[in-house]
Length: 405
Ligand code: ATP
Ligand code: MG
Image (tube, rainbow, N blue to C red; front, side):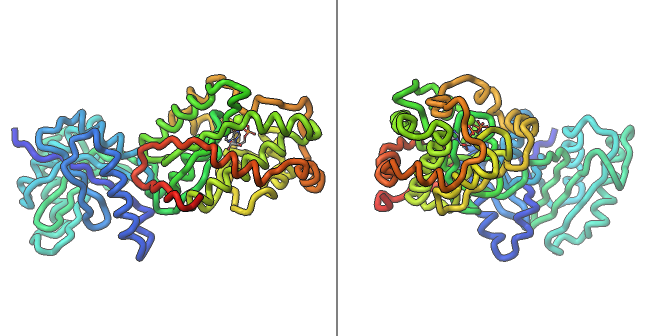
């Protein structure tokens, strides 16, 4: 049987809308895919008129092509990926390639052909291409029906610069924007369920996430740090985390717990966390902090307490899950692949020195007053200096130069 080179066509609606920035977004997505698809037999990735074209090595099997497609679908910025073939710009050859592509899209019962002609050098217009290739497919698949609306499969045919690309199996991607197209953010990353989802959501909107994890060490074990590392490895698969700073926080919590009104402890821990995250953001050149908070979910997530913690920092604090229900967040964590890791028990600084009755409606004045007892600025510098960086493969991440310290 005739063999055609396999290709995967990557579509990206939202980037298409970005006017003059479009080239920058496309290049970013291209670079991200080039780096992330290292394990697959990719020859090269080209940009062609509003799509990226991934060329697979000759002889690549359907199975490997499908695995590569699945890897592409999880990458932020990918609206859809379609598997198919490169072939000669010859209507007969295109028809044969379309037959193979459509056979691989089974099971289906209805289909239509949708051709695009990018350069008018090809003498047959797209309407005629639809008819000609549709005819070949009807002959080859007599038991299937052509349907113009609501069809199961669309056979795409693109005539671009002397070459044709034909595909049928097409799957929706996670959408969003390519990581690295919206700046850097510092994400407060616990080993819980929520913050990994919040981090991933920011990456899907194009931000490069830098995690900060506050460990209870040396007052607790380092178990939570291993869970955070596992979580980061999940995010790393799709280029969604650049680095995680682990901050040994236990001794500072102990200090606070020894001489602050018990009800305000949690707020003061959290204010200190925010300040350290802000200092790391300054060193990284990041533009915002991110948390996994959801309104009212726990005592510290009331409006009053959110205000009392925000008050400690100047950077905007983004909370992508603020309006999400726990069940929705759990579903998102399952889809992302972090839920099982997050469900494991590990003491982190959250479980350390917890008061019996944490304040649910902290008064800003009382919080500020209680904080005066501590050398916050000095602590922030010491904690940021002690933060241990762990790097992950993220094509869009550039570590800060040392001079920012
Ligand atoms: P999560 O499931 O993300 O831990 P949670 O429901 O347990 O959230 P909290 O413990 O109140 O809620 O934490 C709220 C947010 O504060 C978290 O989503 C996270 O962004 C941040 N945070 C909490 N603990 C830590 C930690 N040990 N290190 C870094 N960030 C933390
Ligand atoms: Mg938590």
